[in-house]
Length: 393
Ligand SMILES: Cc1cc2nc3c(=O)[nH]c(=O)nc-3n(C[C@H](O)[C@H](O)[C@H](O)COP(=O)(O)OP(=O)(O)OC[C@H]3O[C@@H](n4cnc5c(N)ncnc54)[C@H](O)[C@@H]3O)c2cc1C
Image 1 (cartoon, helix red, strand yellow):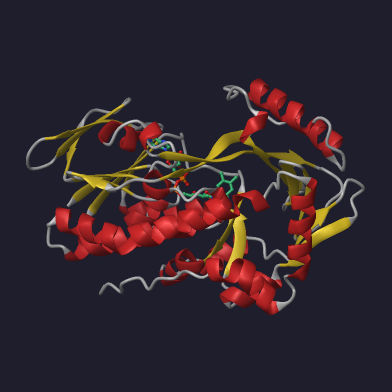
Image 2 (image 1 turned 135 degrees about the horizontal axis):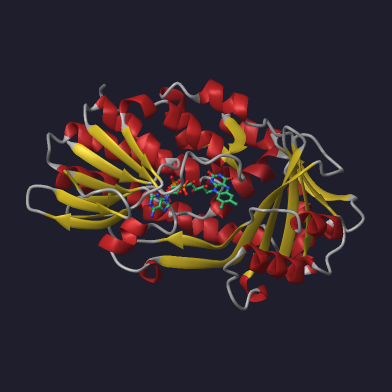
């Protein structure tokens, strides 16, 4: 089949990789002018890690990644008040765990398929019209094309989902937090391979020292601090300054850096919950279908798993795409819903809303060096409670 995928993030190229094994022709469409570079760091483990291993990509992903040593919470004077050694994750995942920029993960997967697929950059699928024996897709810029199937892999705010399934508001479940991130050059102090965070009620700012003298900052805060979504760079700066203006620790210095940042990620933390991921000849994967939110820390791995299963089912369906879509949903939807419920439950540990909540979170994280406590608080949710099908290639 000829299959068009909108979105060259994590899910889209992963799906393309496995579709090529079935001999399909892939057209990948990405709105950015090129594969994205830089940006935030994600933790990567679990099912997605295992599939990336099958794809032969783990050595490169680990090389680009950071084998973090510690998550450290500090008080307003910078004294350690909580946290844990990342060995805890290593132990629970048999050391199959790394932190890596989302863009490095995405580009590693893309590099594994780029010379075998057609990619259109700087464009988006803008219309989807079923023609009986296929689909005519329109673009913002390119001329229309005829394909057999359309896959929306275009992230949380998916346009394909909007066009085919309806407005985002029907499917979005807000978790009660916003997140912002930016990067700075030459920031001091640095703590190599230690993720350092400071919380005040309802808000947390963290920093991670990166290669090439860069530092990544991440802000998580409750929705109540935002009255209106900022739409431009200056609006984002103003909002973050207002929310963290009175916080201590390194906040004044970090807000100073913010003034020089020319790219600030800013979004509400949401999940996408749908009753079906397919309609006619269109299906969704990754955040477009079932975003678990960044607070689950596993969205990339799940996106890769969805690509693997959808392709596997399409590769063995003999052209019966409806059956493949149904099997893809039946295999993954209950598991994804469980992940979403867990992520929503844990959201408050990122930015506890009271001083008591912060102290409790810090205490629990200190106790995580004790195996059964770590297992009780995170172990059960870290493990992926599913065995994915094996497909013959
Ligand atoms: C701050 C932050 C921290 C996170 N931390 C973690 C973590 O620790 N671990 C983890 O596993 N996950 C984490 N996540 C979540 C993770 O990034 C996502 O779950 C994952 O990237 C989803 O992959 P995807 O391919 O579905 O979407 P994306 O990676 O978002 O890719 C979507 C792609 O589609 C493109 N696109 C969008 N609209 C269009 C359009 N109209 N036309 C064409 N192309 C389009 C985008 O440019 C992008 O390239 C985090 C997310 C954030 C924001």
